[in-house]
Length: 213
Image (cartoon, rainbow, N blue to C red):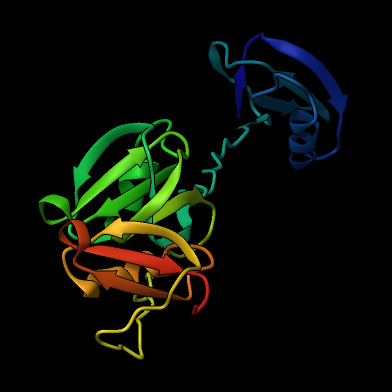
């Protein structure tokens, strides 16, 4: 028994007021209708409200759809004992390399990070990959779209230690290390390295080799 005056878009012939709803839904701009005497009056807005015996009115319900958020990017392509030189955006202090991923994804332009144990753990957030070099104890990872963050596995270990022995030639490169124990990570991080020889030259040198001479 209610009418809303004016603001008509169009009208349709319907025997029942409930049939007006589909017409209003299908009519651009229609927000309500008034049915009276077999006619649906489709309206763009509610005008002055008045009494109209036998009339029916209804407003279209509005529903909001909440979009499903996409998962934030995560990190992948973990590499151990590797550094990528330069291209630093900033650094953050993190005790674990796994904690760097959130910092990188939250930093505009960050595409990878390198973690080392400087200052009890530092994430170096970078906008590009620079030159690769060995970084014993370090971890690097790129921003990706994987659904989980893998835990880095322990670095490769070395066996068959021999004292007072050299294997001549087949050197790939050398690194300066005070202890022979530190050579293992350098060899693990160097493509093609199969063994190393350490001596005390220059305060300690690891000779990384691709075969036994």
